[in-house]
Length: 178
Image 1 (cartoon, rainbow, N blue to C red):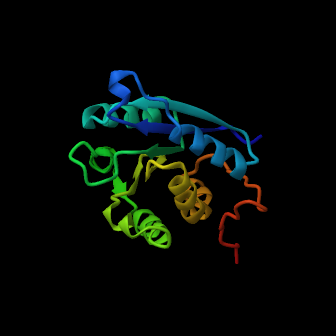
Image 2: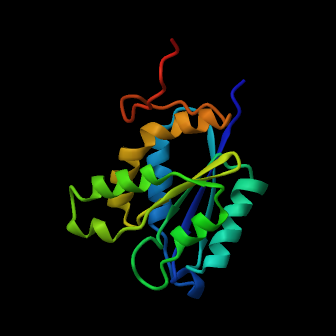
């Protein structure tokens, strides 16, 4: 029996701390993952303020305590002083995966020249992959479309749950055994 994957979805917003924020980015990630995945999965969804210590604590809780094999963040990746999601991600990760950020920026540059301002990154914490996405739903989908084909295999290599995908929507890459 395949174990159900837990996936963390974290919306980071400085407006979250004042309680007047309606999140559209987190639901966009959930909708995209529902489009991609045919295997069972459970979201661990939170909206938190753009504060590095809060982001770090949330990432640790989702990976270490809740057992998420994948944590996807949205927001806090730009050049503004309050944008600290990449710093929080780097602080809690054992190893960084710079190819994710490189590919997301390259993909986003096809649509907007300001993609060079983005600081998305990804890293590994124990048995979990953490990926930082931009904050706009359109950009979220574009970036996930680019990097998600590598995510199921990354989770496989970390001995996480087997993520099955709707290959008419997204085709994961898993090397064939020799």
